[in-house]
Amino acid sequence: RLPAEGLACPLHGTAGCAVPDPGELPALLDGPGPAGGPVPSWGTGTGAAVAEAELLHGLTAVLACLIREAFRHEGRVTAVEGLLRGLARWAGEVNSAGRLPYGQLRLGAQYAQVAGRLRMERGQIGVAMAWFGHGLRWADAVQDASARATLLSDMCTLVRLDGDPSLMLGYAQGIGAVDARRRWMATLSDLYQARGHALSGDAAACRRHISLARRGFARLGPQDHLEAPWMAGAEGAMRVDSAIGGALRDLAVATGDRAAARRAVDATARSRA
Image (cartoon, rainbow, N blue to C red):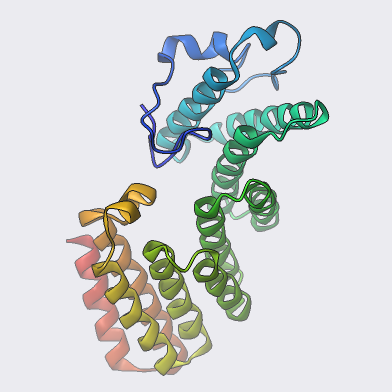
């Protein structure tokens, strides 16, 4: 059932939608399974008989499977991008028919995010940013706040790897501006702003955002955990400590502050405990 691997249903959110059995997925998608294959045509010809919701559920289930395996198998990026292109074409067909391709664009943003992460893992910065940009545009088209926030967080990581703290700070502030009512977004924003200020050597601002992030994380509620399950419990604490450790490590490198280096070691150790 959805959500799976952090993926909500693109039509019904966290309502607990059922997904097709794994054996049904290749037939449902009219060709490619998780191993890849030709880009499918959905919503036209004989494929139009498949209920739109069922097909979107199936595509979401496939993406969840790919997420579980993608970073262990080199060929998965081809499968993700092939399905993403088919999904984008389907969205175009729905739009041409005079309907907003709401579910297609929401799911397309999730596929684009995974494609961008896979390219980022391979050091392909330009391709990764292009996919994140597509995902952000699709998320904005259907006002998907959660997708916008997580895509901006990935863009923060990407520009940090590219050595651009000022651009990172801009994206990080953008996360907090998506929806001020969602505490998990504010917490993410503070974590990335802490890292951006660390790279710039601004110790006071870095420490201020670390404190805000810790406070925000402690105040996350059930709705935050439902929307961002990776921010809940021990996994969430590990992510926060890891992010803080990275910020303090960057600050120590930028300023030569030995106290920051010691705190970085402590935070990193907690994240691995």
